[in-house]
Length: 173
Image 1: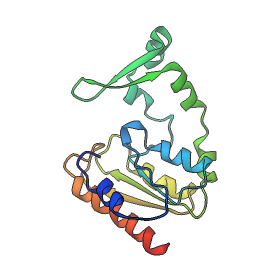
Image 2: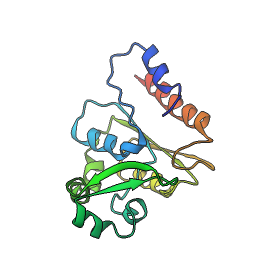
Image 3: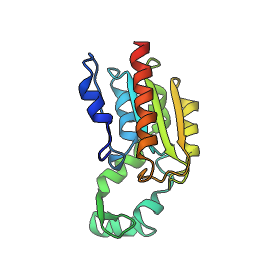
Image 4: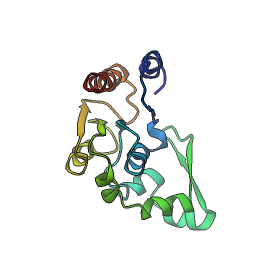
């Protein structure tokens, strides 16, 4: 989250809670998967998470990703500038494709509050944020108009949305 004040705010608070800030590059859905398996989480912030993990794989990994991963066993994924961003192994891709996220979403504790933030100009459709409402009982969506996947020009709006949700959660507890 770059120079966001969110981690600083969380450090200042002395609360008896487990907090995990997940960078979207590691996969926003990882926090949802964790919450579905471990019911010790009371609040989840999902940044630009894709509702259906199987959709958009070719856009993220390249149109020939299947042949490349079979040939080399991994794919180097590059960002828009053409620089190395992250590596996907064949095993990690197969694990991802085998994960039943619909079932996982239903396993998230009903007391766990979930916020999904999306940009309206994200490569992952902002409508995905609304899909989570159908499966996660205590879910809220927040769409930031004009924001892309990295929220480059919208850091203040992102910070405000996340901190407001966290503060609201603290007031309820």
